[in-house]
Image (cartoon, rainbow, N blue to C red):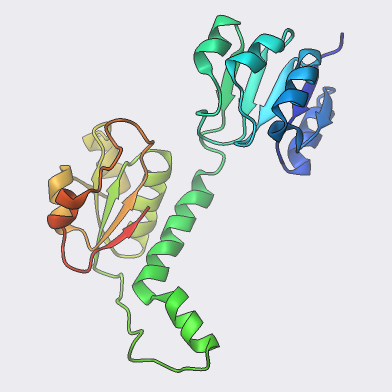
Length: 231
């Protein structure tokens, strides 16, 4: 049986072509991931499964996947895959943690500008035929303090963009080394100091028990009046 890969979520044609270029048979069925019963019926034919977030790879599905060797998630999170069940069957689970880092970081920077200049509200006002220049003065971001919570793949890119925009960048990340902070041009601080100093706060952490509700009422009470938060 020749190795076959099933793509059960929406992926770009480029991704499908990559398999074909390497001589791998690929079935692109982007709506199959939503149909658990149908997916379980056909999964036994495949050596590889490529997914995004719609396909839920449960223990039941893994038990039906008698030939499956690898599950590839086009994205960062693998919370839609039962990892222990896959491990028990010897199935490798892979993700693409760097695939969309720049896109996500740039989106966060776009949000910083949108908040600073109240772009959504100003756009709606202008479309309504108003010209409320005084209402949408906004603030400059030059010279402001950007607090980055989580300075990994994405957070570090946001940090360097902040430095390039002449912001003072401070970062909280227990895994950030002093040398890496220096390389990025950021000040490494504790979380309470970040809350107290930042004019803009942007979050780039995985959701874990330690990061859940990291910004709560107590955290907001420590922040500057008018702080802008990007999640």
